[in-house]
Length: 349
Image 1 (cartoon, helix red, strand yellow):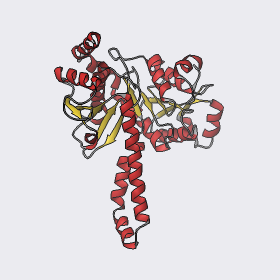
Image 2 (cartoon, helix red, strand yellow):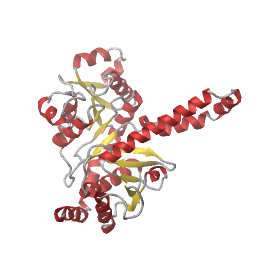
Image 3 (cartoon, rainbow, N blue to C red):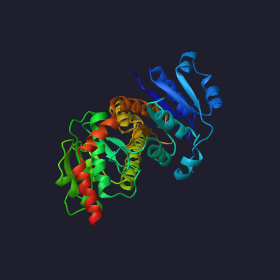
Image 4 (cartoon, one colour):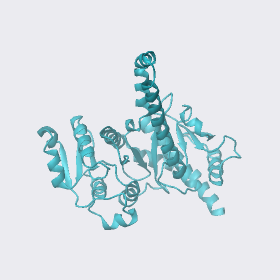
């Protein structure tokens, strides 16, 4: 039996059309959906959909909308009937199993903290994303939830990222690396050096710690989970996305400007180009889960396409069914000595 996914229908840049189309596609594939937002507007747009699809999609009215300009700490108190927090309320009440939104990521974090609460033992939740590599994928966290981090946060990200790599990508004992500006132990910052010492001193049964890694190692396929602070992670994410778009555009321009023979060769290479585009397209991963809160929440890009939103819905359904939150609770409990050492070091400093 599939779970029921609550979709913030008024979160994205092109809402609610993108959300509705993705919801309809998900419903056609057997997923159960609750669209949350202005009921009249949603019913008006759903009227164009076939009767069968309308019958499998629930609508829950929400009178307010969270915007990108809203300050999360104020909106969580003043806009309680907005579509995003109502989605979280549905999960908390047991009426849905997961939340998907392309809205304000800061507000998603606030809702996760105040509506779901943190999993016991988690100091700060993290947002996780994935990059393709020659063997499979590389998991990266944090990608923006925590700009300023302490060593305790990075070591907890290592545990949470390892659990995600196991649950979502089947990595039995993931290899974890700490992103730095060199592989030598003397490199990095006070933050990374402290986290490195802690992870070296407390080996884990859940993951293998590989030490420092550099940016080039993100795509080598030897590291399953890359740990960094949210500022660096977000810069990495945006740089990788921009580079992938540049490569695709340069290839297209080169082919268009080529003589006929080159164009014919490019046509023969088209399957390879299409495969590259599919693997480098962030839409194929759908969304970024918020790890460390006691529930399933997936954040999609504000300008998410229908395909990205649909894949975000599918990801939320998988994570809810596979019990990511319980897996995190168990893994965190196995690393109490590591976390205690991190907090002791912080107190001593």
